[in-house]
Image (cartoon, rainbow, N blue to C red; front, side, top):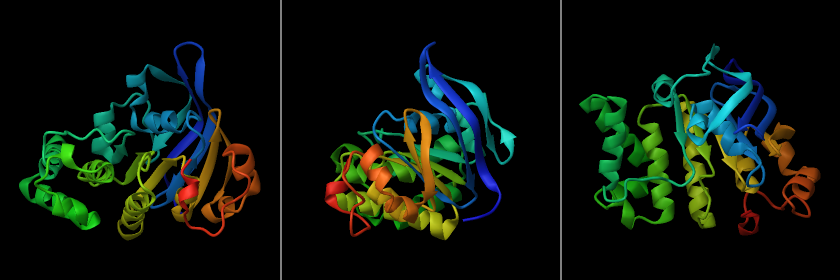
Length: 262
């Protein structure tokens, strides 16, 4: 994937409090329409990096201490999460965070209301969510509390899409899900990327699944990028599996096996 970057990170450093450095000098660029995977163990810094891009890191008492984040060439440091959402960045946070008493469709309508969409755009956004995840259409009148974990995650992704973001950030969307459901969710995101050109940054511990779809991938360890390459290159990189993910060797065959749930 080539082209002008939709977002650039330059020598970014992020701290919590006065002493805990969670991101250490990370630089990367994401071309418009690209699918980028961030892989690494829990606590490696993936979530902090995503929150720095979406403006949410300050809500966790974090702060950017050095570097820049450029979206469409403009420095977005200090902009509120709501401004960044309106400007084209959508994020799916770890943990789903659906409104449990509300139905699937009510959850989607709340998201469209927050975006200030017209009645027609609201209907189009909801219909688009049902096309991307047909299971949600079947469950549209079901309270989110009665959905499976996978269906709740589909709903969380769909809510992030109602504002038609040009960049979608996903934080561990397959955590705790059965392999088939995890594949279904990531495949849906990959279709969105391929068919609509939405750039994706996916933070995942499940390296085997993430690398299948990634144009580019970065291995993060202790807040820094240790390895980078195409998804195919890193899928066969022995050092990745042995040193950074604690596995004896790259899995074979790809794309995905249950034993890769990390």
